[in-house]
Image (tube, rainbow over all chains, first blue to last red):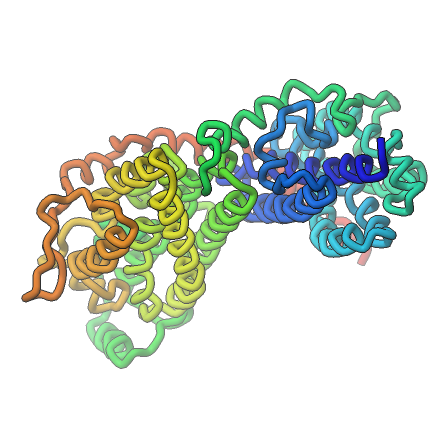
Length: 253
Length: 325
């Protein structure tokens, strides 16, 4: 893999993760438990789709094959997606959605903080902008996880179940592979091992306040960011998201 | 008009107070929550603002139906922003209604058990992407007709909510027009979708204004109170006059063979919608009434544990803070 190819892969990881999570959250629109939550979820989805436009726009530029951000989003199949497995997991109940969000946000904020110091100015610029949005995302998702974890018996039980269900997808975010290592060596991306410590500190504090117990397992499902093996859920998501572009090829919308 | 068929409440207040109240309205003063107001004014406003708020909330559903299938990242972002605005409009309006002594939860329960209505238009399905254009062009276009004059309504909180809402609605209508334009200039299939969307949404949009109310006593009372600013027929005429040239510009055909420009009145003559269909929809027999209410009920019921959990947590925090003091 050349440096350019690794950079392209890395940008897809960033853009595909925000795209798929943004899409997932947008599925809530009009169906959230409280009006304020509906608005906040739509707002988060909107931020993530905006970040996707920037990441995939840059990925397309780096690839230099004449593809646009929209073509990357709408015309690739499952095996070409590089998003984290965590973000393609279904919404489940509201608690599961917010737990997924909180786990991702706690990682995302650390990643963007580091990337805003990247040697690549384009990446640093996008990250600095996205960081402002993600700071709000984490404030909100962590408050909700804490509120529901330390709420009623039922809300506590549901949040613990959500944490147990999603924990195996945490490892992939914070465990470096060849692309992460190459990006770190090139001064573009942070050392994920060091980032993991900061992520753990954040998550431990949130889970303590939420009276939730972190699962005693380090087992990690992998295959999302490499594209080697996504979950079955991604194909269904793409079926819906890409339908118009697939059904009416070449049309402008 | 996200509020249709609002019957005004009879008022049995002190005639002297009523006269003073009416004089304030006639002189263009705003009525504020703490001011004296006739019981009928208060109740009619609750019904009208509540119905408008419910329409914004239920109105998220037909467009929300296409967020996950929006064709490009930009379209997805715009549609999300629009539907989010609608939820925000619901929030302002519930806030305005709350100043009249009814809680948001009470209003929500009345929506969910069918005691309160929402606009008939949201009981129609959105079947193709062009429907996102038609909804913006026609539904938001019709809503603006009513909401612009309501910025001058007599009740202060309602008027201020309308001012904020109108700013966003004009953006909504523009995005609808832009979608329609892309489709109308697009491939054969896209043109067909655009025309089909116009065909399906034209008459339901005309119904949004409600049946003629030129002889209605309820309407006369509401107009005297300045909580209704124009008759339904006036607004419908204005809407047709504005929309027909837009459709023509797009190369689309309004599905009304009787449509003609009438030089004498300076407006179009047009066919009335099928009012029996309107009354059926209002009664709950529209194509999507069942689904729309079921979706709102499901969101509310599924969310009960979340609301309870967050309330319980807030109570614990308050107790801990008190104990620490």
